[in-house]
Length: 166
Image 1 (cartoon, rainbow, N blue to C red):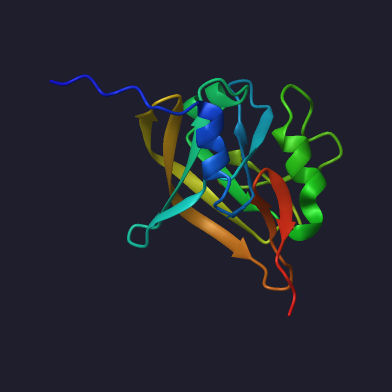
Image 2 (image 1 turned 90 degrees about the vertical axis):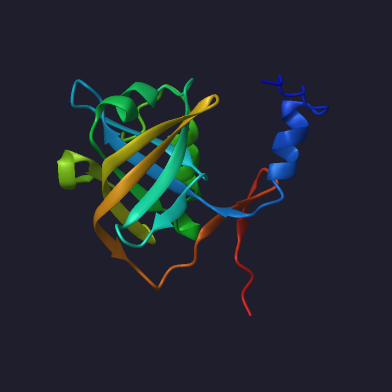
């Protein structure tokens, strides 16, 4: 078996190229082994299958919330609305109480559900797949809610972005 060639680019250059793909922003929540709510901001969401209804996200092995997402059997994905930039920033920070002023309601598997989002998906873990320095988590959607009256919060080239109005 041949050893893969070392890429001729840096991880920073690779991240910059990937930043050219505009994405929505989501917060994923669950519970840690002590039952405390955990969450983090992601932009690695993907729909996977309609039958069964599967979605995925990736989590960095170095993330402070990694162990919780490895141990709990449920999670919730929240698609953020344009007015929720502060929520995105708070859940992107390491080590602070992300739920401080937020009063989530309990979803399936007792995962915390955030309010006022574009949508949320309540999922049971379907599969975890090793993927380099991340783990890809596939979730089977058990329930969801959605709103059509809010514009999305987007991310492009390392900055928050908004949908241009007509």
